[in-house]
Image (tube, rainbow, N blue to C red; front, top):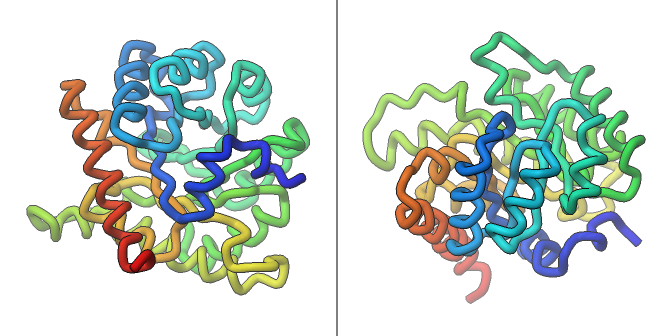
Length: 262
């Protein structure tokens, strides 16, 4: 039995059909009230997965508020087992956006080591690993292939913090998403071409960081199986606006897939 078969059926289907929507509360967000608001909006808005900081209490809180499977994010693998015991459906190394302003950079060797440690601790749990956007694209591609060989089940991209959008409106949103879209395109093709892959869809790629309702369809077109969205939802303070934002993302994913379904 593959590790993906341990996931809830609805989450498996979302990945297989390339329409997964993950709402990210934030790797460093331990504010229980904020996590509850974000999680509730994710559930009411039609998301498939909620990503929270790696804390057992937050796992339980987010699951109750959303009714959705929970992913926990951390850069310390030793934190994962307690969160899984609390009910987390999957774990994730990264993303690293919260660390860059502190000058903390994750290189390829460190991310590989974190992946190996995580897999050793949790042999049967789905593991997503973020590829640092600070690496050149060719090195991101190579690292992604090595991460899969080391036990990663899902590869996630990032890049929102490196973008420097200078335009207003939709053009600015596309400029903001450009780094993570480029990474999704490059990595998905590198994984499909890797000799270790038996099919192009074997290792899903999640595109995250800097996305919006304007750009999530572009992520799917670039080869992603789903998207992770944080600030487009969690920066909002009004619960109704948060639900509306999630629904807008869900609708945008539906429009991305419509040509494939007709």
